[in-house]
Amino acid sequence: MKAMLSQPMRDKTQEEIVATRDRAIKHLTDAGYEIVNTLFTDEWYSEDSMNSRGVVNKPLCFLAK
Image (cartoon, rainbow, N blue to C red; front, top):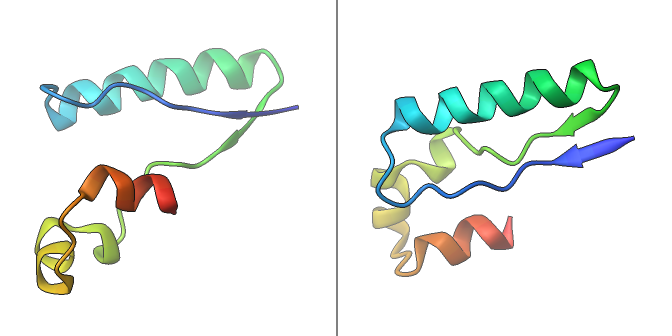
């Protein structure tokens, strides 16, 4: 079984996002799920990189990935 996490990020700190995600991952892996990673933290998705590429709609960029 696989699970893909989708969570609200607007108006949340990076720490809140990570903490919520970690809790969900623990719960799901304890239940036997394999987690599909959808949290893109590599340089390609950094704020500076997206700005230099001219990305206007950042949420859409993440969704397209």
